[in-house]
Amino acid sequence: MDTSESSTKRQRIETPETEVDLVTSKSAFAAKIFRAQYLDEKTADIYFICGSQRQRVPAHKCILSKASDAFDKMFYGPMAEVGDIQLPDRSPEAFRNFLKFCYFDEVNLNLEHIVEIMDLTNKYCMPECLVVCGNFWAKHLTYDDICFAYHWAIFFGEAEFKKFCEQKICAHPQLVFQSSSFLNCEYTVLEHILELDSMWCEESIVLGACLNWARHACVQTGSNPKCNENLRSVLKDSLYKIRYGSMTLKEFREHMDTTDGLFSDAKEYEDIIRLLSGSTELKTGRFKANSRFQTSFFTWDEDRALKCEINCNNSSVFTCNKSMLLGGFYCTKNCQIAQFDMTIIEKSNSWGMGEGKVIHSQRVTLLNNDETFIEIKKANGEKGQMHHIFIRPDCKYQIKFEPHNSQPHRSFRKRFSFGRREIRLDDETVLMLKFPQETNIEDRCIINCLKFNRL
Image 1: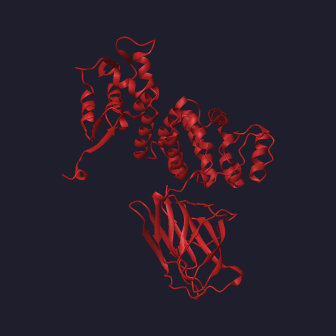
Image 2 (image 1 turned 45 degrees about the horizontal axis):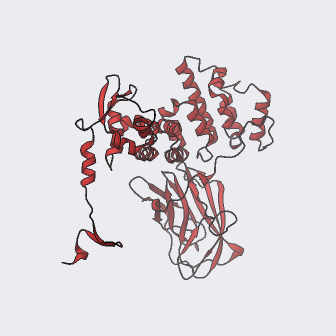
Image 3 (image 1 turned 180 degrees about the horizontal axis):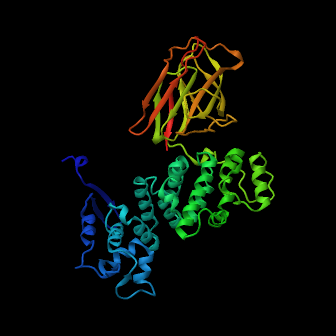
C-alpha cells in the first residue's frame, strides 16, 4: 500500500526509551460532539432564564468558560454565581443564537436579533464574535438602516464595522440623508457623521440635512420646528462641524433665509463670513476650516478592482451611476515616446462641455513599444505615492492630454468612435462614456482601459 495515498499521516516519534506511533487524521467527530451538546438539557449544568416569559435556555459551564473569560469567572471564579442566570432583558431567541458561537464552527445569524447578539458578545467579552456579527450585518446593510447600524458600531466599538459604515456614508451621503434612519438617529451619530472628512457631496447639502434632522427632532420632542432657537438647541455644537468654507455665499444665504437667527452670536456669524470668503483666521476657533474632499479615507482594494476597456479620443468624458475610485488607465502604443500634461476635470452631471474644476494634473510619458499604464500619482509624483480619484455619480469627468512642450503625438495605432456608449462593469455598475468630436481631425485614441475600484 502506498502510504502517500492514505487519508491518515503516520509519524514516528523517537524518545530515549521507546518509539511511539502517532496517527493523525482529519475528522468531524469532535465537531459532532459539540453540536450534540447545543441546547441539550440532559447534559446541561447551567440554565439562563431569558425574557419576560422566563424561558430556560440550557448550556454547559465547561464549554462557555473556555469561550470567554467572563463566563469562566462567572462559573469558576471566587465570586462564582450559584443557580440559574437571570437575563430578563434578553430574548431567548437571541441568546440561543449567541450560544451557537460556543458550540458551532459555523454560525447562521439573522438581522432580527443582530443587535441583541452583538450586545451579548460585548457583555461577555467575545470580540472575535463581535467582528463576525459586524461582517454579517455589513453584507446585509442598506442605506435605509445604515445610521442605525452605525450607531451600534460606535456603541460597541467595533472598529471594522464602523469604518465600513463610514465609507458607505462618505460615498453616498445624499442617499443616507434621505433615509429614515438618518432623521431618527441620535445626536451622537449626527456628530460622528459631521466629523467625517471625505463626505462626497456639496456642503450645502450637509447643512440642509442637519436642519432637516433638527426639525424632525423638534417634532419628536413636541417642540416647534419653525422656531430657530429650538433648532439651535437640538443641533448644539454640531453646527461648528459644518465646513462653511466649502460653500458659496449664495448657498449659505439660501439656508439662512429660512432659519434666520440660527447664529445669534455676532462672532460666530463673523467667523462664517470669513470662512465663506476663504479666510481661516477665526475669532472663536470653534469652526472646522478644512474641506471634506480628502480621498485618503478610501483605500484601494485590488480584489475589488474593475477594468473597463474603451475606445476614446484625446478628450475622454465619462460618468458612472456608482461611487468608485479611479486608480489609473492604460494608454495605447504610440509611434514614438511622447510626454503629455494630463489633467482630470470634474463637472456637473450634464453632457454639456462647460467649464469644470481641475481635480488632478500630472505629466505622463507614453512608450512606443508597449501599452503604458498610467498610475495616478500625488502632486510630487514620487514613486509609490498612489493617489485615487473619487468618482461621484452626480458628476462627469474629463481626462485631457496636452503634448508637453508641443511634442508631436500623432499616428496612434487606433481611431476613436463618436457618440455615447454604456459599458456594464458588473450587475450594478454601468459606466456611461461620451466621445465628443474634436475639431482637430488628427486626434487619435489614447486611453484603452480605465481601472476602477468599487467601494
